[in-house]
Figure 1 (spheres, helix red, strand yellow):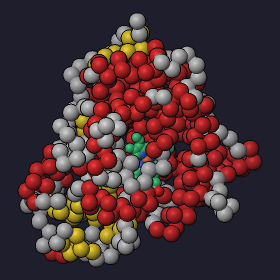
Figure 2 (figure 1 turned 120 degrees about the vertical axis):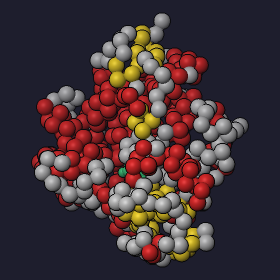
Figure 3 (figure 1 turned 45 degrees about the vertical axis):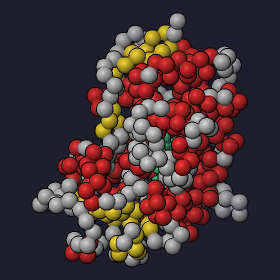
Figure 4 (figure 1 turned 90 degrees about the vertical axis):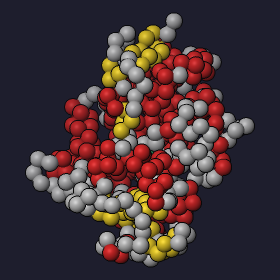
Amino acid sequence: MPTKAALAHIPGPPAKPLIGHTFDIVRDAYGTQQDYIKRYGSVYKVNMLGVWRVNLCGVDAMEMVLLDKERNFSSQGGWDALQLIYPGGLLLQDFDHHRANRRIMQAAFRASAIRDYRLRMCGAMKTLLDTWPDGEAFCFYKAVKDLTLKLGGAVFMGLPLDGDLARKVNRAIEDEIRASVTAIRSPIPFTPMWRGVRGRQFLIETFRTLIPERRAQGGDDFFSQMCIAKDEDGQGWDEDQILEQFNLLIMAAHDTTATALSVIIAALGEHPEWQDRLAEEVAGLGDGPLDEEALGKMAQTNLVFREALRLVPPVPFIPRMAIKDFHWKGFDIPAGTSLSLNPGVTMLSPEHFSNPTAFDPERFSKTRAEDLKHRFAWSPFGGGAHKCLGMHFSTMQVKLFVATLLRERRVELAGPPPKWHRMPIPKPKGGLPVILRRAA
Ligand code: HEM
């Protein structure tokens, strides 16, 4: 890792002793970053939790780093903080090794598999939404996290919605996720990292016992699909590889979806004209099954989903580590430097989006197509070798959620429109209290 002296030529704000810029960034990640860009330009350094990190801001930096034509940047080095909990997952692999494993993983994301997940999810979604209260305020963020975890038990693991095992598994997943964003990185007893490491052990042991049966019988859930997944050359995974890849997959899927659904619900509460539009779109689907054809007609919902991901992307920063010296925008940056890309702030830039802080899903319409000004202008799913594998799956899940909810109910905010924590995991301040009422 380069010392402060090796990065002395990179501009940046003065750092406080010990804490560096950590508190400023955690308190207001976007505001601080926008201020630093104004003062120091699109390449600047900060100190987070004792580590010097160079921020490379804007669409060109994202294109250069994520497409990585020279193989200069490591995702494994960037996501090093996840090493204790998710050591063998795709995000912690690079180049040929990563590519070979990603080709196997893609088998679990083919269109026919996603159709099976949808079938499994349809009934479960309705059962879970039916348990949400009518006419009284509740905390949406907590409820939707619980919903996505329970749905995950069914769709990702093939477990019953509310069984004892599903409950224990979900607790272990929560412990892992908390550990992956904690400041104390050693598993000191009773700290979040210690709980996360124990959660990981529990999940690995539990899922190992299920592999023989799932390999023999297959199944229409992600875990079963990963047990039998093979690339075009017939190459699959051994037990340890299945467990490592699956462990990362459930983390990658969980909070991202819960955040996206929270942003959508907040937007529908704040913009009743858009809620009416989506309700009308859902009514137009009739009472039939929410199959591929029906979801394919939800174009307005798709616009709202895209706008939600622009305004509050679930992954607002993408980390990488330079593994070779490189040159960017006039600066020599040495191998070993931790880098941060910033899709979150970039997607709020007036350079690409008109009136960028306004909720305006029409900006993605064919006539305006603001997102097409640059291939990384709209980049909530990243890009390049590690681009999100769950993009189509999450679009399906969001449409299914919106259709199931708006077939029966309407959303009201039970407080002012929320402000958002941007880091470490984006979520609504105050938990997003809402009231659901039966549609007239
Ligand atoms: C709105 C929801 C989601 C968003 C915004 C999102 C965003 C992202 C981003 C930005 C990355 C790239 C990170 C990087 O380059 O360092 C990523 C990777 C990944 N995502 Fe998602 N994600 C979402 C949902 C999902 C879901 C539902 C799944 C699984 C079903 C999933 C599975 C993955 C996997 C496996 C990777 C790693 C790919 C690789 O390293 O090759 N994601 N996601």
